[in-house]
Image 1: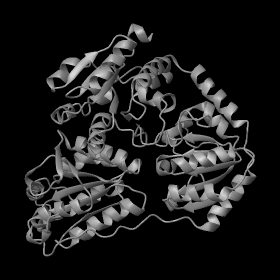
Image 2: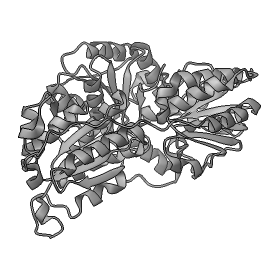
Image 3: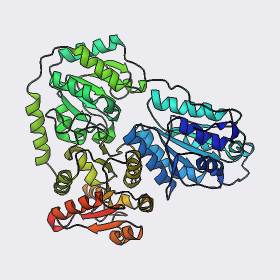
Image 4: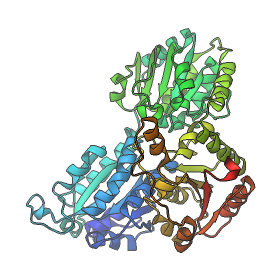
Length: 534
């Protein structure tokens, strides 16, 4: 690692990020980030050139989602920050550790309204609502302190994104000493009293259930052990999918969105909720009907008394807390009826599918049969992914990513790029819809430049079909949801990618297999209304 005492602040900041374990940055250089670029020339950190800062933010988000390490977006002030902010909103909603590092106008101009290049009055005020904190470093010495604070948040608190802005005159200042990474704090441990109280409730429960979210991913083994000891059904949020193997006889997958699962949840007399907000975006119900007592495990104390107040509130990491409960629980009478109930619910779900969901499931079943078990799926906001949340089985956490919280279109492709770079040996695939794909289609060029063997499954239902369906349900004449599409195959090829349109199940499987062996990304177009799906 490089001594930062002979560098300016921009260079020293890059050297300090390296000391915190950062190996990849995503962004687009600009005149205000040239001192950062000097640092990149002296650093082994890889810089990935996105084609829009929104794409850079999503790439950092995707990198963090699969690796558990902070993703970093390096952008210019003004439009660079505001372009990235949509992706920061997604990371905030899903508790993903992303550092947005930006320049700002010169410190002596801030707040004066002089109309400087890329000026945003109160830049960090703009990003504050969507970050754990946002701050401007007005001196050289503030930079290592703010970066230490950011990585401390990522390591010990609910890992929401952080924005640090450094004005261009501060970036050019000398770093007065060799900046070093600090020893990071750890997450709080659960108290013995809370664990015992939780175990008392679970031992006495007649029909316990477990709800898991994205915050529970590190606790997979312990949660499975608890579920098996109790005979408790496990219901996941979209982010909690795979925390217990979807094929496990106690798993209802990410079934919170289904009425069949919501009705079943009403029967629970004790609910163990781990790392989940029990959010409306997972169920599309403003408030779930939960009649039982709730044990909540979360890093965020504000979750203990929101719409679902906790009978037992355990503030701590999911892994340590679940392991403590599994150890302390002891022998319990296993509820034997649950396996049959879960099987019946899963069967009911398949019997109650809409016509579109039947087509989704045909496609998802074909894909599940051909994709390796450990494939990471990066889903955009589209109907194929909505159905996949409960109908596409994954064996472990961090394999299914569908950012339902912020629900912004365009995340799927750049998230997949970030994931591919974070875990280059892992198979990664992106599921996108024809509408959302157009939000960040330019990142095909980035993926091609990186030579990623990335299959991109484009679900073409010829419009914004979810909104079409919603309009029809309310007898609203369609408006703004039926625009024409480009020739996706020609578009992808013009961006230096492979591309094909499939017309059979075998064709889809052959295309996916070829894509994993290719020298660049492959766009695979599947039309919902093709004869083989109808």
